[in-house]
Image: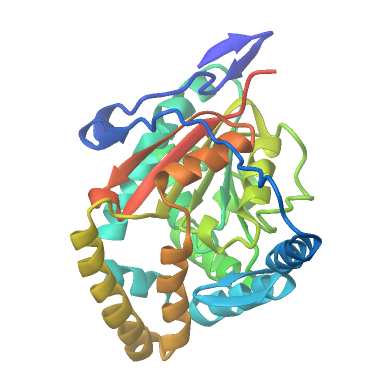
Length: 332
C-alpha cells in the first residue's frame, strides 16, 4: 500500500504470498511467444469453409460438454443456479468433503483484507471490495469477519470498509441476503453498509463505474460466464488503478494419473450426490463438465494478461484441483 496524491493505493505492486499462502506452491508461468501460421496457398472454397466454421464457432459456446447457442448459455446457467441455490452450500461440503472451506479460507487470507482494513480505518480512507458471483455470501462473509465489520457495526455511521456481492442469479442473492441478516442482523447491511448485494452480469457490469474498487474477487464463478474474456476486461475496468483481481477456480491437475482418478470421482460421485441431496443430477453433471472445459492455469494467466492485467500469476491448491489467480490493474 502506498499514498499517492493524498490517497492510499491498495496493492499497487504485484504481491507474493505471505503467511498462510507461503506454504502453497507458487508457480511463475514462463514467458511464451505466440505466433500465427499463415497458409501459403488456399483455394477460395477452403477460405469460404473456414469463414463459415469461424462464424459458427463465434455464434456458439459450450454448456458443459454440449455446444449451445451463445445467447442461450446465460439462461441455461441461470437455470442451474436457480435449481441448486438452497442446497448449494450443503452440496459443497459433501462434494469436497469440506475441503472447499479450506480453499476459501486460504483465498481470503491471501487477499490480506484484515490488515488492509485496519490500515484504511486508521487513515480515514476507504476500502471497496467487489465479490462477483458471490451470491450465497461464502467469500463475502469471510471477508466481513476478517475485517471486523460486525464489531464496527456497533458504532454509528457508515463503515469505510465495504463488500459488494454481485451475482447474476436472483435466487442465489436471495439466499445470501437471508443468510447475512440471520448472521449479522440489520445494522451491518442497513446502517454501516459494510455489506450489500446487487444483481449484475460479470461480463457487463454496466451499473458500476470505472475505477470503483480496490479489490475484485470471484470464487468458483468465472468458468460459468459466457464470455470469460469480457468478464476479465470488465474486472479491469471497475478496478481502481493499482487494484487487484483475485480468482479462485477449479483447474487442472498436472499429473495425468491423478487427473484420471479425479475424473472417475467427479463424473460418478458428484452427479449421484446431486440427485440424492438436491434431486438434481443434471445441474451437477453440468458443474463437473464445466470444470473440464475451463482454461488450465497458464491459459488463464495468458487471458488475464490479454485483458490488460499486470503481474498475472497463480497458486495451486490441493495439487491443482483448484488455483488462485491474481493480477493488477496498471497504475495510470
